[in-house]
Every structure is written in C-alpha cells, then in structure tokens.
Picture: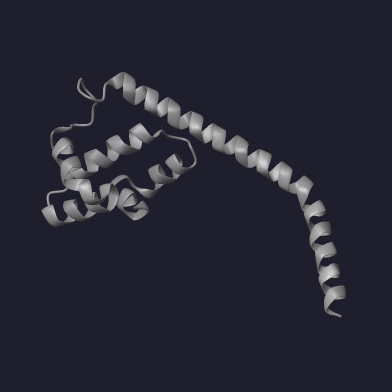
Length: 128
C-alpha cells in the first residue's frame, strides 16, 4: 500500500505523514485528488484496489464526485477535524508508550539476564 500512496502523493508527503508532520486528512485528500486525475481505468482500479482493498469500487464511487473537500453528509467537516485530532493523540500515546517501554526494558534486562543465567546453570548441573 505504501507504494500506491507514494504513486499518488509523492514520497516527500508520505514521509512527512509517517513522521507526524502532516495529518491523515491531508494525505487522503491528496490521494483522492490523485486518483481523480488518473484517466486510465486499469491503473486507477489497480491503485484503488491496493489502497482500499476489495471494497475499492464503493470507495471510487464516492471519490468520483469528491473534489477534495469534505461537505455535508455522513462525514462532516467537524468529524474530519476530530478524526485528525484523534489520530494526533494516538501518535502521541504511541510515542509515550514506546518511551516507557524503553525505560522499563533498560531497568528489567539486567534482572532478566540474571534469571536466564541462573536457569542455564541449573540446567547444566542437572545435565552434567
């Protein structure tokens, strides 16, 4: 899927998204704009299928009329804004959990190594 997004929006924007510099709503809007520019139906279907999976036809129907802005309908502009904020919060939580894991790992690894060494010694004595 990464290759399909790179084809539609470019590697710089994809890297910026991966690093948290831009939000998912911009990436999706740019991907939709890119899909709408593709005239070759086979290429459009291949990229859409790679991005959206087997329900790509339903997604393309919606995107065919979407000109890059979220309007009134099932997904309101407020919902899109909230989704972007939620995505940012999830990234922040993930970053904090990774930081906590590294701290815990640094504290626990010496103790876990001692336990592993002890089990190895016990096993060696039992075998020998």
